[in-house]
Amino acid sequence: MEIILSFVYVIGFILIHLFSKSMKFIKDTPRSRFLSIAGGIAVSYVFIHLLPELNKHQKVLEKAVVKGIFRVFENHAYLIALLGLTIFYGLEKMVKNSIKKSGTKKPKQGVFWIHISSFFVYNALISYLLVREQYNSHWGMFFYFLALAVHFVTNDHSLRKDHKEVYDRFGRWLLTFAILLGWVVGVFTELKEIYISLLTAFLAGGIILNVLKEELPEERKSSFFAFFLGLVGYSVLILLV
Image: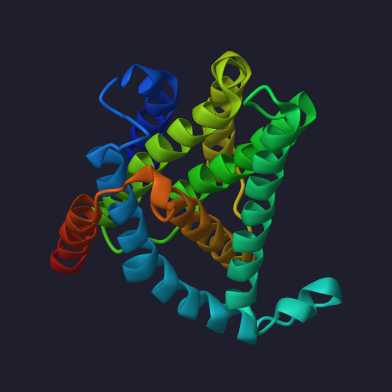
């Protein structure tokens, strides 16, 4: 049953990437209230669900007997989250610097492929964890889908803004394939609990950066009320169900 339900949600993720371009009500400046609500939902998910999950994954890392390079991370789930945040921040800076230097209001082609490759892994990881994350109920999977679905809308909007038509020509199709690939790998492959812990921690850092970079810039003219509404509304739903 869970596999079938996860496949339905994967189709939902795919449809978002394919049709988010048609969401004409989404504006960048002043920022669409929908995007601010989406940001609030994603932040709520991180702090109400994902960060507390890191504590559980921290205990998994502490108990695991790991050899080699992973011994460095044995007691540091939060360090992995910080690593995820740092990597995506570095990629964002790379894109913005390339846009400034190009003079064409879009980054160089090589930068595009590096950026899209990172989000390919990001999307595949989200889809993989949709299958392999442990949920208390079907509602848990639904709330995971809801938070990441609106997050995908925000990411799509940001990537399209940065890369223009090349994103619609190549990027969105690659990210759509990544979602399907992550789900297929999740269905047929089960990683050890320690690797799930590392992946979840990395994802948490990436989500935090990708949400806050969209909401914090002053020129976006984000709606604090819409952000607050999304944050409180989603938090109440998670805590009540």
